[in-house]
Every structure is written in C-alpha cells, then in structure tokens.
Length: 178
Image (tube, rainbow, N blue to C red; front, side):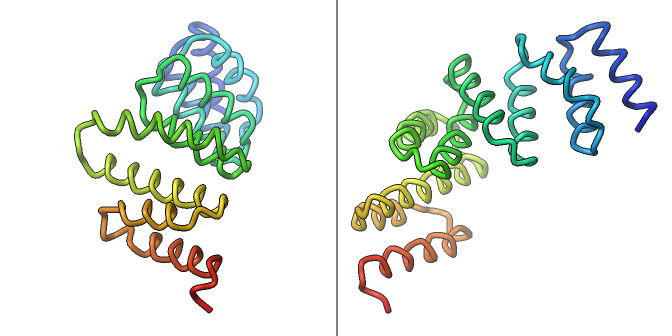
C-alpha cells in the first residue's frame, strides 16, 4: 500500500485533475489509507468527469458518509441532469432522510430520463428500484392504493420478492393482513 500511495500522491501532484490517480486514491482510501482523503477532497472541489464523481459518491455511500455523498450527487444532478444514476441514488438518500417531497422530485427526474433510455438489464433494475421507492413514499404518506399501484408496475419477476414484501407491509398498515 505504501508504494501505491506514494505513486498515487505523486501522480495527483503532477496533475491534480487526472481521473486515474484519484480513482486509485479512492480505492486506497477504502482500504484504510486515510492520507488519501485530503487529496481526494481537493480533486473533487474542481471539475471532474461525471463517471469519476459518481465513483466518489458511491465510495462515500459505501462508507456511510451520507452528507458528503449527497453533496456529490446534488452536484452531479446539477451539472449533468441527463444522467440517470445520480437521481436514483439521491432519491434513495432522500427517502432515508424522510425528505419525501425531494425524493419524489428526484424519482420523477429519474423516470423521465428512463423513459428515453435504451431498455436493458440495468435500466429495468433502476426502474424496479424507482417503483419500490415510490411505493415506499406512498406507504409513508398512508396512500396505500397508490403504493400498491407502484408495486404493480414492477415488470421484473426476479424483483417480485421485494415487491411482495412491500405489498405485505402496506396491507398490514391498512389492517387487511393480520
């Protein structure tokens, strides 16, 4: 790790905006090299490719550094509003924080972008997550018929278990399942 960190630090000092060295610094940071943090933070104060900034946001989320991840996701949605993933991750964070209106807005952006995307496996997985989040929001608002309608939109049979668990939760809240 020491050799990798020394090389990464030198590369970042030569070109602080280079994506390759900062991605390596992120990996080292996740492995416990805390000295990488200041250089990583400095890098992301400037401009960065959306892919690299997304990698940073995912890294922050995996280490449960939610406020910092939210800053990166908001910057991504502001600077690159055409990207899907930042909207979905931001919505997940907003639901966790109880900011349901913000989450709903983020999900609307995500789904509008998803309507124009090329269908594929990641597209379907994203839509499934969005529908589950919308159902969760409706359930929190005690809008049970809406919540069930969101669950009915889930097309992926592999995700059916998650939908069925959410459906059972909604029915329990409605008093229809004991």
